[in-house]
Amino acid sequence: MKPSILSHPDFRRLWTADLLSQLGSRLAMSAAPLLAVLTLNATAMQVSLLRTCETAAWLLLGLFAGAWVDRIRCLPVLVWSDLGRAVLFGSIPVAAWFGVLNLTQLYVVLALSGILTVLFDVAHSSYPPRLLAPDQLLPGNAKLAANHSVAAVIGAGAGGFLVQWLTAAVTLGLNALSFVWSALWLRSIRMPEPRPSPLERPNLRREIGEGMRYVFRHPLLRPIALNLTTTFLFQSANNAVIIVFLVREVHLSPSTIGLLSMIGLLGALAASWFTERLSRRLGEARALLLASIGIGVAFLVQAMTGPGWRLTWYVVATLLAAVSIIVCYILQSSIRQRLCPPELQGRVSATMSFVGWGVAPIGSLLGGFLATALSLRVTLWISGAGALLGAGFVVLSPLRTLHQIPEPAT
Image (cartoon, rainbow, N blue to C red):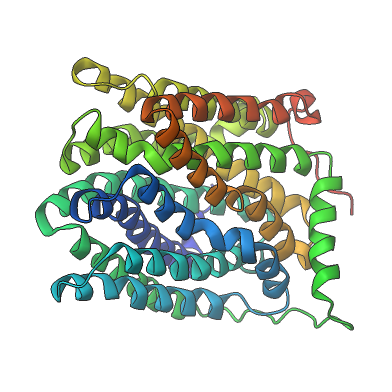
């Protein structure tokens, strides 16, 4: 019987650190918009700007981060990014204690933490191939995706209850503690990480171009990248307004929002466990295709949410979206890591993150503008339709005819 990937002691430390960091981030994802809506009386447009600040760094720095990470060791970047985010989020409950917290500080904290998140995420996605053997990447990514799922379930539920019990500002302070704990676990990893071979003539522009050309000239990575761009654009529009919609149109309390989200996000936990089995049964390509379609369908279903029995639509939509997003995340990460040569891992990872997260601030602004010009519910309908159309890049690609992803030529 093949040993569990968690029997690898250093991967276990990475996995533990990631779980704590993800949990804190999920608490912040719930608490920041609730703090803006309930305490700072923010409008839908102002709430959408929170997500814009949080993700704008991907648009500005994502590609540069990939080229930089390919030149250095990843582990120190992970540790210092965690510690920096701990300081930033720790400032929020302090400001609230002295009665000086305002939207400007919230925007600044999210923007600066967004820069550190870009560095962390690019280094984090490039680090597993330096730590694990190629045949360990799929189970390793599945375990890391399980952290997303567990954090999503616990963070969604606990976030709402903690905001109602401790206030949103204190809940964001707990996020700071999670980053400190994550940094300590990362610091305990023992396997020496080799320093990448220095380039003879470092050229940032050329290095970034190599990563982008590899993605957009590759017949399998290109449709995945285009699908990521479209999905993230409309998912960000949805995320920018959903909390405002649930509070002001469906009239839910923070604890109820947390409970309903937690029930739906149990699907993400299940998906992290069955994705490997699903990919063996259907094939990686077909499983990815179905999950891409599922994201768009889920957002369309979410737009039917309303008071009373219509809350069921929110649970069903969150369940389907969580399953589909986690399946996509695991398969896309594993496909990219397997197809990409070691010397391009950071740049290709950054390119894939850039085409997704780079449009997130634009999507957040789009959500705010649509909600202001039309309505919150119409914004949800538009975001669902857009995400579903984005699945067409995968459906109409060579992935449609494949069962398994071919191994790269050696």
